[in-house]
Image 1 (cartoon, rainbow, N blue to C red):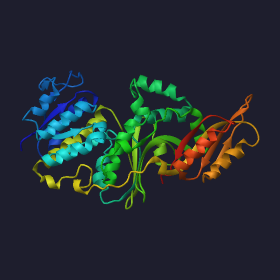
Image 2 (cartoon, rainbow, N blue to C red; image 1 turned 120 degrees about the vertical axis):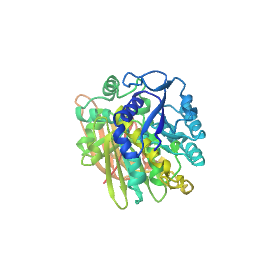
Image 3 (cartoon, rainbow, N blue to C red; image 1 turned 60 degrees about the horizontal axis):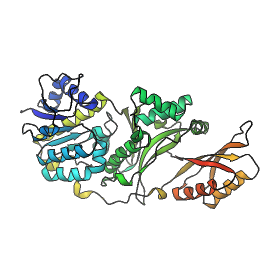
Image 4 (cartoon, one colour; image 1 turned 90 degrees about the vertical axis):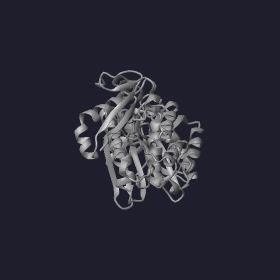
Length: 433
């Protein structure tokens, strides 16, 4: 059969991995697809020495790729949202199928893109947009399609996981580990997207839409980073039998869907607690299958390129299929997406870990417990330590499950006490059994 011709936009880290996999595994890919897949043209601002492109048509204008009538699939790997959005919409308008690894693009503009693609009868594939080489989108959209998804929780940013692992294993401070992560290339010079949870929120938005058949709603995803987590927090959590992980969590409740990214205490026995370094993992609990775990490399040229090429293969396989029989972009038919409520963070219920510094005098703990009681919060455990030569001591309180708004009110009242020094550190606690 006629070869499938690919136009590659971007030849950076992921672009080079994609190109080399298509070249190195060409024979295997042809056997799987039933026809060959060839890179017809590359649009890139500069060459990449990791790729031998001597026989490839290269243009410095990526929009030349979209306009090329020979190209069947446009692969967008340039990143960002403004130019990428224009590129993808132009590709769709020109009748091209699209493969992308761009989580921000899908999370923020996916609804528009999928509507245009549906109208033009083309596919937009985005497996590499979440968790790099882990096939989590296919797992939820296809492998678990018979299940009603109860919840999912994931370590979906390798930089954040590396930092939390080093803080937990070696007792290091956040700033110290972040500096090393930047030296190693795990974190950007401006690490905001990673350490403040924005990258993970983009990914969680995508996973939740596929899991629950709701439109993409990035603006409703609660996002909290790890920059305020201290070595002391991690140490106290370990003493209580917990690990601190930066999780993306989506949960279906009777009231609506929870979408939240934040530092989380989970039992040291939980599978996710033992995912360390820059690795990613996503747990999904379906009503029929129970809890499942998908684990692997969440970034890098070859792992992410692996997912990009898998999407190219999937698209190529559908060339002889009726468009109405393809797997829907968000797992559910486009006219069957629900308007299920995304819950505001104030309505979320979970346990809490509170770490505060108080005056070492009688009655302070009683005042704090009274405030918690007044807000309907029951205590699970308390740790209080003495600091030699100081009248200020740390106090750690673990609570049972309570609504976020109750805890917010309690923390505000506690911080107003004259015997409490500074802000109260609050980390949510989750049971992921």
